[in-house]
Image (cartoon, rainbow, N blue to C red):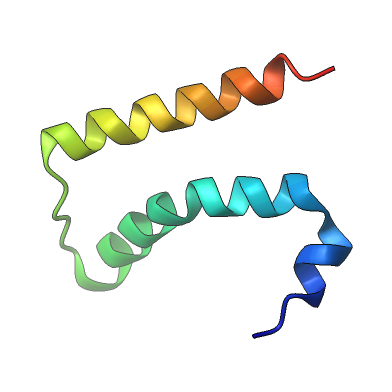
Length: 61
C-alpha cells in the first residue's frame, strides 16, 4: 500500500478524497457503463455527509 502521497498531501486532502470517493464511484460508473444504482435514501445520506463535511471545513479556523 503506497501511503506516501497522502503524507505529502496532508490529512486535509486525504480526508476530502475519502469523503468524495463514493461520489467518484457513482460518477465513473455512470460515465463508463451508463448505469446508476443509487436509491433515494442513499442520495439523501450522501448529501448530508457532504454538507456535514462542508460545515466542518468551513468552520475550521
